[in-house]
Image (cartoon, rainbow, N blue to C red; front, side, top):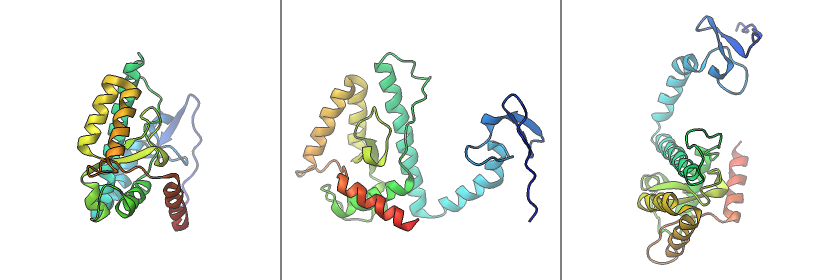
Length: 206
């Protein structure tokens, strides 16, 4: 295997893309280890194949779509929050989401085992009916700030957040969480002990 030569970045925040055969802004390259193919060529040469392989697995496809929906919803929550606070909704450096697909998978498995939502089917079947929402929409959506709710409840939460802010969202979330203890069963919010168990399980797999 021939080792690729290390081409130093040119002055002015640009880097040479071997596929484009031209210098591009460093922002056009993937984050992480230094690469010499821009985002577009990384996607066309490797990204498409990797995604097609991942999408061929039904469970991974469901997880990817659920994570993507959570990411899109988090952007909507963020825009509504900035609008309520009088900030330009289109100029945000806020990180929308940090929860991973593996963490969502563990969340689903925990919900189907311990949930008061009355779930008894396979986690991936359960995933088709629910959404991942933040407990506190002002914070980044993470494993410790995530709950599973039916899509209908998610829409109600977003509407309340958009109209009434954090107070309205928190009241509606609490009502849905309380009803989860009765016959309505609307919310699964993992306890701190369950979060630690999920993290320990994922760490043991690494």
